[in-house]
Image (cartoon, rainbow over the protein chains, first blue to last red):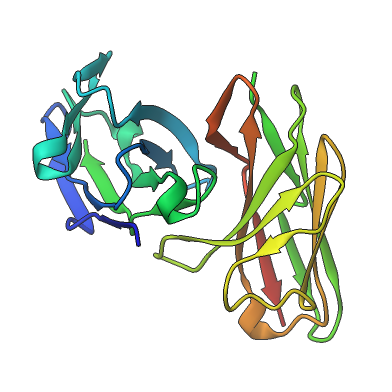
Amino acid sequence: AQKVTQAQTEISVVEKEDVTLDCVYETRDTTYYLFWYKQPPSGELVFLIRRNSFDEQNEISGRYSWNFQKSTSSFNFTITASQVVDSAVYFCALSGGPKTGGFQKVTFGIGTKLQVIP
Amino acid sequence: GAVVSQHPSWVICKSGTSVKIECRSLDFQATTMFWYRQFPKQSLMLMATSNEGSKATYEQGVEKDKFLINHASLTLSTLTVTSAHPEDSSFYICSARYPGAPDTQYFGPGTRLTVL
């Protein structure tokens, strides 16, 4: 079975602070994908990043960065210099391989609600 | 690219009526779409996988006669909640596999269903 754990249910930071959202996953597959999605108050899920299990390079996109560590089964997401517009619920997700239903089956974490205070 | 729309964005209906929700891929063809349900302050739960031209695959515990899914074209999947009851009130979100990145799902804006 695959599982995604986001231990932080809610985080509040003051604008311009850096914040890291944690994500720990479990899977029996050796090939899998990890994702982060943003869900603003409007409800729409916005795709942020996809990372396959063979690529452990960290990625930076503007103020966003992701740290993938297979050794600890973690895929953490950092927002640098947070802004009010970053306030949303952020979901970490895992798409497994053949052992866990194939790549189509995506398991979501419970989400971390981020509030950025002006 | 990879835009998915849903209609309606919200709907209120009386108990016992049926409600149809549409999911469309606007700028790409999607052979596979997915339907999720999200309760307040909870994560997304996959309900079913919708494949164009064939029957949907439902997750365990999801009543296929209650939640009818039809994927009649490469750009449209519909979810019909039959004989809706208040406990069916939820946020329903669809997603579609994007051909350019087949392992990534792009999501629609969601439909909020309230059953009175």
